[in-house]
Amino acid sequence: MGWKYILFDLDGTLTDSNEGILNCVVYALEAAGKEIPDRETLLKFIGPPLVDGFQEITGMTYEEAVTATAKYRERYGVIGLFENKLYEGIEQVLSELKQQGKLIALATSKPETYAVRILQHFHLMKYFDETVGSELDGTRNDKAEVIREALRRLNISEEEYKDVIMVGDRRHDIIGAKKCGIESLGVYYGFAEPGELEKAGADHIAHSVSDVLKIVGDEGLKER
Image (cartoon, rainbow, N blue to C red; front, side, top):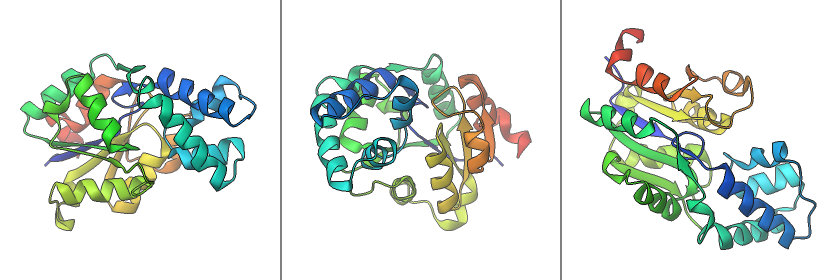
């Protein structure tokens, strides 16, 4: 049988959000008096929790990273979250999966309040049975914690974990899925670096939006 429950990441999986995220990272770095790295380095901010990103990518202390995250959100909550666009074909994928009777949840490291606003903005809420993100205070920041909360809200028992798959574009999605004992689909149309998803241990790989439906939809059942 195929997957009954499908968890989706947001940035780099459902939406091409690099413009908004990068603009807000630059805004936060400028406020902190930090040098602005090149675009390739800035793209590494897409995926991991922001506090981790500011520390790992720019060498900030934890305290500096918390301050920078607050500054980032100052712009993101008003402007940045809508500097964003859906990947072509993604709504059709969600629609088809719902027609097939799948239960769909969003599982993102982005604050839940922002994630809900983005789904509403793009008229996608009707496809999601649950929307799970982090909290603004830093609670539920780790991807595995987000996934566990999604599993809890969907009332999925451990016996049903075999029926769940996490779809995401960065290693954090794949590692989080492994920690939770569920399968993962890594997508390469997002922001992953070459080889990143295989190295993290993705169970399946998609190179296009249409591949996602082919793998997790009913037509992909024969592969299981």
